[in-house]
Length: 74
Image (cartoon, rainbow, N blue to C red; front, top):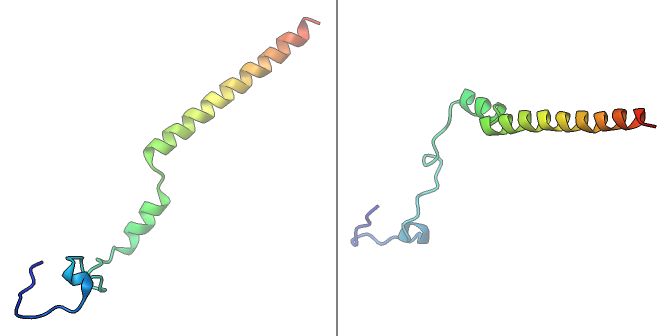
């Protein structure tokens, strides 16, 4: 953004080169796009969730197996 020296600028944000923050500066998103982004989980989060659930159940089964086998030896 270049400012002509013939016209003084009174706004300090424009003098510093900051973008203008008017209603026309922010593009409006389609109503369906925002809803779809907010309702969808990231792929990495889903994969980690499934892995943690699987490993957690595997560990719980191992602890259960230890108690069952330990109870038979008494």
